[in-house]
Length: 486
Image: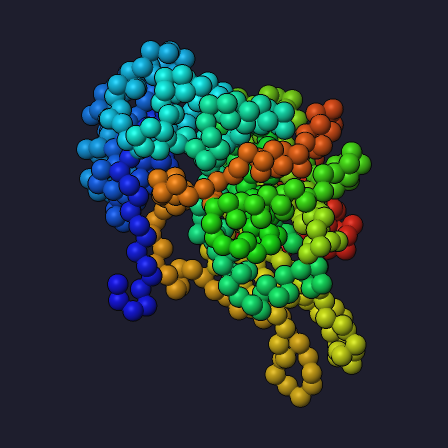
């Protein structure tokens, strides 16, 4: 390694990756392209093999052909020859005996790329067949979200998994946490003294976390109409970002040290009362509109969506963290579909400077300093601050320092799953949720789920807008406004 080059990541030990549900969209669009990217970068061992399991008719060659559809330039980087296919029904005990015979032993990862209803039964069937016994190598299971649909179901699934596998074997995956700029939150905070020293309630007025999407529900209506924006985004993606923004410095980057600190943050989030759930949260549902040149129909007119659906496609939620560092600082979370722009970001707004020094200028209100952590689409960090305008009098202007990842680093095309798959193969659980973290996240949103289940209509908003009027009113009632989307 030459001077100035980053250290070369270690290559994980050889293993067999068993993808249960290999013919589904998740495998075709994300998992296989991610593995190909890892192979391209030399980050998986040549001994890694892939065994796909599903119920569809097919053989090794036909499954490889189907999986090639979403590969960049159709390049496999030698991974196609390592894929085998085993056909079977997940509810058939005989499948797991056949799976046991098909595995060569050694290290094995079981990836549940299936519908959530199979998560518990799959783990139990693997255990009954002795496939989770760690005798001649590690045995790990990867569970996709949604991890439960409320607090009770999440607890039940955790208990079900805990009966057949140790916590160290379970990897609850959240693809948001694999993004470079999400992981950079920790480095930006703890690697820069000028930020960490003011990262507290003495200096910060409030924090906004936004995950805005331009896409509508489209063909996912059957799933989405039973989930909604709150279940789909808040207890996992947004609370995990919040935890990284608000956590205390860990004593190392060891997985348990990181997860302990993140769990403390989520545990300290104030669970709202019924009144707070009513007053501090807004739910919306998109109506017909245009996003750019694309016409979007009403949510209720989408395929597989109930014509009288009350499922929310937008959520805004004000939270407080009851800790010394964050006492009194509101965190505003919002997420929605069919909005004006695609934008995932964290906006940290600092308290205003005293106006006394500028009382003789024509400045009515000085804009506050902000740190904006842009997660997607244009990954980077922005610092908003004040400078003097040129001229004989003291007058201020808001200016920006802008850092963009693409301007400084070569960013290879990725799906966001590469880091997570690499970490699973390395046994690093830093970016994966523990059982207690999952349950704590559901506790935070359960009062909203209970209240909204009682009735009422989500507030309509036009597709292509920034969301419902009620979300703006939520901020205005505190004398604040949302950072512009996009």
